[in-house]
Length: 336
Ligand code: TRP
Image 1: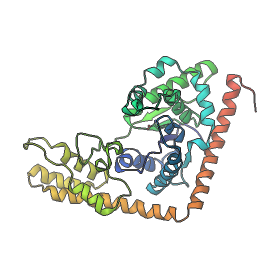
Image 2: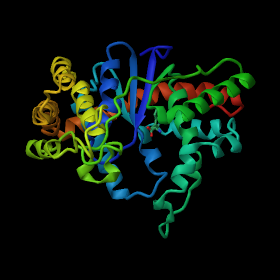
Image 3: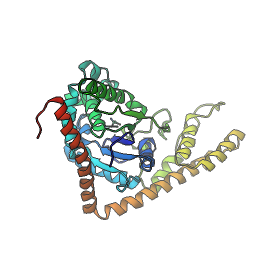
Image 4: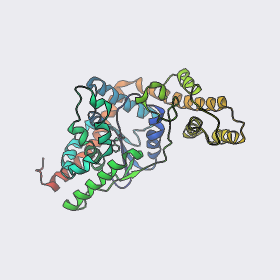
């Protein structure tokens, strides 16, 4: 695999089971990019250590995330999908890059501020770790170690990407043009809201009723859609957030014709919300079934999947090792 402008890198944290918010927000796009670029995708378990977590769960969640990504269509024939901690070179580069990043820059990271002030941090025994502070440097290392030119991320990662670029520029100023300055690729991401509360983003942390899991049972998906909030308060001229969210979901499922036709009904004042909901539920169930079938197939041979992940991580590692070899030379560390 060539590492060049067309190398795409992105990472996802090993959270609990994937939900449609994650899928439409990131993974769907990752899958689509595979046909156009050399893609390298990582489940970033080192990053997951920066917030309080359970070590026993981390291993499982990491492997589950790999499996879910494969089930969603990340294709080992086209892309590299690997586990971050199986390529420890990320950490070595993180250390080196941390010497090209100022304390002040890291202090200005809004995600650091948000996380360090979160409720979780107030709980006894939890600390705001140095790891959380240098989280963005590790992210820069993830990207730069593969000399990736494009990084598909959500808008919330804009500041981290800007920092990655600044680190690359500072390194290059000192050691000559070496790293490529990575560009964020903000794709059109549907803003999916919770079905139970359309003023909040669809997110696992709000509780299970606020998101639809990718591998949820059909009856449960249908129930969540059926009970989704539509109109609250008196009817107004603008579409209520709940109804808009259901339309957004239909579009995200690529049901464009149905979307158009129901939107025409809405504009004509003839739309029945039951019908909108039924179409949304059908679309989600259809996707869920497709992914579940693939997941079952993957899980039928756990040994093979484990081997495949290690093989892909080995591929990533050989690229990362080459970068580290060159970087060590540039910064004055001995060859090894
Ligand atoms: N910080 C990213 C997020 O929370 C995850 C991530 C880690 C990442 N390393 C990355 C994303 C490198 C893009 C590139 O979404």
